[in-house]
Image (tube, rainbow, N blue to C red; front, side, top):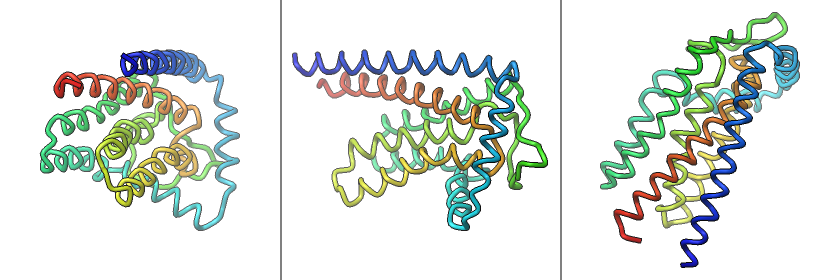
Length: 220
């Protein structure tokens, strides 16, 4: 009984978060579409790119690496494959569904078609990127793919010596990728914020469905 009450409370909190996040995204979407954020986005990018420390530059490039082709098209397949090899087909299916964020990103990009940063005051690092700027595909896919893998690791990896490094690396990737996209000149701040709002909403929904079906399968 107590467990059921706790689940309901967590469910209410998740619903509230997703509702607020989607509402905030809607406001952001129309603000970007109308061009109201252009000056703000430009000022933020210039400010962030003033950081010239070599270690920071290397960190930002490293964080974004997994989001570029070909690794961005292979890692999302490799993770479910690993889970299959380890004998977890149900988890493998949901890990693959974590990549559903790519479809969300693709659909919105085609709707808004926002140009990527292109200004003399902004340093744009050469990279294999395509499509429009809003939202950030890197950010939303990191949350869907690596976010769900992080949840699985926290849930099922028993050894803290293995679990802690995995969750620290994945959590850092998700937390820093937004900053890296702006620093590298590939996205605006509002692109990144939109992806965090959508990405975490999707991850919460996916995780909720996964845990619900998992309980039915195991009878707990």
